Amino acid sequence: MSWLTVLTPDEWNAVRLSVKVATVAMLASLPAGIATALLLARGRFWGRELLNGLVHLPLVLPPVVTGYLLLLAFGRQGPAGSFLAEHFGIVFSFRWTGAALACAIMGFPLMVRAIRLSIEAVDRKLEQAAGTLGANSVWVFVTVTLPLILPGIIAGMILSFAKAMGEFGATITFVSNIPGETQTLPSAIYTFTQVPGGDAGALRLTLISITISMTALLLSEAMARRVGQRLGAA
Image (tube, rainbow, N blue to C red; front, side):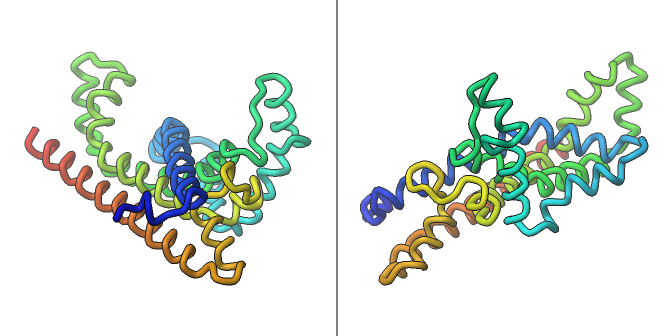
């Protein structure tokens, strides 16, 4: 018996939407995550600590507060939301794209921290050696730094994905809990706990959530180990 036959259509939609939202959130935030981690690890500028605080703010703020701030900024009446909707036709509030935005912001600090620690562990002498051979800073980053920090990037991506899979407070505040549109796994589990006889459905989705998250973590460990072995053998 497969999960496809055990889950109802609404439950299967919640699973697929969660994976979709988590994947989009992870990939969309990756370029900014690498750039921010590099800036915090290597940059020396006024306001660096302020930037570091802003990046990690979602970790200490109640998720509901983050969701409400997103609603104020990216809602249909918000400054960013109205501008994007009017000029580009992009709508975040009460759409799955808004769930991806909320999950990306909530997982961003974890991604940045993992990548930043990896960057700080790089031996700068290797980069300097490449520079003395005539490589510019961009080429040094692509050919030397990026391969060395790849395990940290993988770890950051998986942490962001896992955080997105479990995000609830910011998502439900920003995009509500609309079946088939914004109802992710945590929202569906919450819905089941609020209705009589919903324990079985909540348990099924909980097991699915644990399985997906654990698989992602094990996969990240295997990928990071494999990359590390290749770098050690190089």
